[in-house]
Length: 343
Image 1 (tube, rainbow, N blue to C red):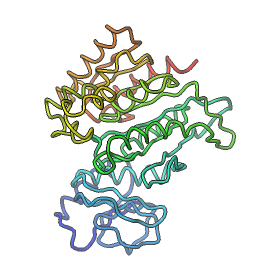
Image 2 (image 1 turned 135 degrees about the vertical axis):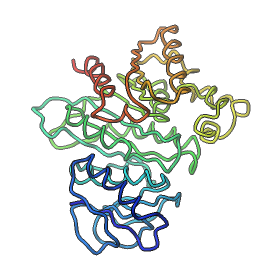
Image 3 (image 1 turned 120 degrees about the vertical axis):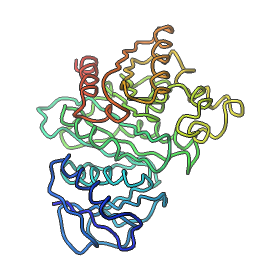
């Protein structure tokens, strides 16, 4: 049983909250109820409203952009995604319950960690590693929970899934974000998990949306990556700045315009880093944002022109289909990943 508990005084129509929650319960195939207050017990609890001290593990969700909040050990806090964000909170609670991960720090900050999920059944041998870098236009309201479902799916396919959280530039600056992705990749060295041996010669980095840019930047900076996978990535930052994608997300993340900080754009923009010199898979849905489709098509053409080893996959689905394990486009992408990595 999962409970969605509404805090007293929550500024939201309770019937609409109930509809959002019950729709997600049905999608996940779980038994769930919407209640008022935290008095009842359940396998998993999502509390909608401001966090208050509570001993049991809870996924707290604030529809408003409240910023991070202190929660009890074992709990999580998500915020700022509006009522639609409740679906992500429910998914996060579900995956934490059914497919728990081992959290490993790679730095001292609250956002400097990765979650490791390993195959439930493994016959021995070295495991290929799937590093997951979430998107959200580099804004702190979006977090590593976006990649929970892919992490679970990849572990089920026989990969060690390493889902990275990192400091976002809206609160910490662009260089902190770049440094955290590099540090999160470096932390794979020395991670020991019982009888599982990570094969660091077969590291695949998956980045979604803004995380696609971070994945290709990491591949350009670190030649140890075996395959970089961009899932609906933001792959032309200079043009993204001019078109104000994500309501001006690019200059807000990087700290200024391309005219003001050209060296930052030159290092960060996948388009300007070509050839990257690492095998790549670029994936996007037919129903995604037209600007992102344009960026992805032109990036793929540019990579081919510079001699990079790149496979381009455009298939059915929207911006989030590429991180949905049940989608056709994700499964097509994994067919190509397995072909390249499973040797």
